[in-house]
Length: 121
Image: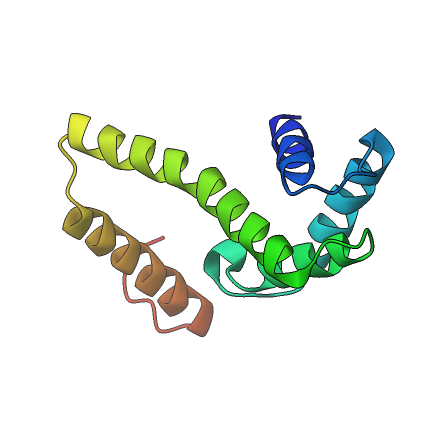
């Protein structure tokens, strides 16, 4: 619901004068449905393109739509990233430790799937 409210506020700020609640739900549906397409991590580029196409229906200029999409995307990811990094520092976990753990788990899973796993199950 928070994403819906944020999107509605930003659409209003983008001067999409005829953006009512129904239009905002439709925009959310279009963008989220389009994000089901395999993409880059964080949906960088795809989210912006889908938002631009969705807002073009209401006559929002391309530059304003892309500016809105980039601002919205940043406002969605920045707080979560800051909170996540803060949590890592509070837990005294370094990113190198996280990367090592991920590497060990992924290589172990690949070895088990390919039948080259030498450990005990």
